Amino acid sequence: MESRRMRMPAKEQSQVRGRSRSQGVRTTLLTRVGDGPLLRPTDRWWENQAVFNPGAAEGPDGVIHLLYRAQGQDHVSRFGHATTRDGVTIEERWPEPVFEPDLQDEFERLGTEDPRLVRMDHTYYVTYTAASLYRASDPHPEWLPPGSPPWRVRVSLALTEDFRTFTRLGVVLPEMDNKDTVLFPEKIRGKYVLLHRLPPDMWIAMSADLKTWEDHRVVLRTRPALWDEYKLGAGPPPVRTPSGWLVCYHGIDHHHVYRAGFALLDLEDPSQVLGRSSDPALEPRESWELRGQTPRVVFPSGMILRGDELLVYYGAADAVVGVAQASLRAVLASL
Image (cartoon, rainbow, N blue to C red):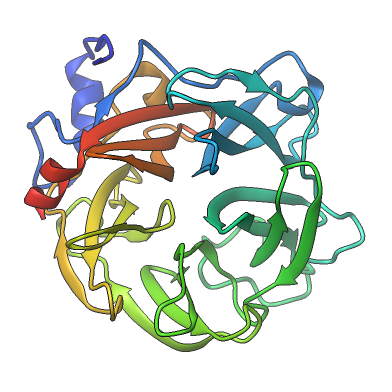
């Protein structure tokens, strides 16, 4: 089911296109589902400003769990929880946050952000960004623009079986400002594998125990004059296909437009790239993707594969949650 598309003024269209090979071409690989966002803010104080960037994982009972980032009037990020069986209709949404920042933790006292979700056996692994600030007397982080708040961001990990009780494992990459970290849904050659981002590129690393991460290597680099020329980062955890590990990722151009595309990694050695989107699979076009806390953003963060159908959940303009679908065969053929 394709959403109703809104006609945009020519000025908005040119802003969205930015510098991309797809300039002037309406992308069709990912098709929006429904007539608007899947999740919007509610009147609850902790999520009445924005809900976005959901992790997604399917349970053994066929229920898809969405763990989403929520912001209220205090501008602190917490996680809300919603469920769906068909992937596109919300059945339950909990009235209280299920995960909040630990105010005694120096790394996450200002918020927990952008959860990514993967299930191994009966346990759900949650990688998320822990947010805090450096001291004003510390050197300003090089990855941030001069004059901006000196955000300190770390990758943290938590485990849950029921989305009510979480076990925190703490920061897993303590020595670096880092974001956009996802675990592979199974071990490869006996080790856990994750993708992470040291700006501007996507990296891969391995661990025997989820604590010490080694063999850090760049797996995807930015590409001049394309839709991912400025920065890029992993979206949802990779999905195993017969052709390789399918990665959905976001790319940013020099106009700060966020788009989504795909890459294919080798099953046995995921540091090897087998294919990559030349053109974006999804870009901001709807009004709720163009305007929000951060305009012109589609930010993929959850992906479910059912047969040949891919469902991609994404944050739109740092304000709401959207869902789009594609044929797996079509995606693989495009790479």
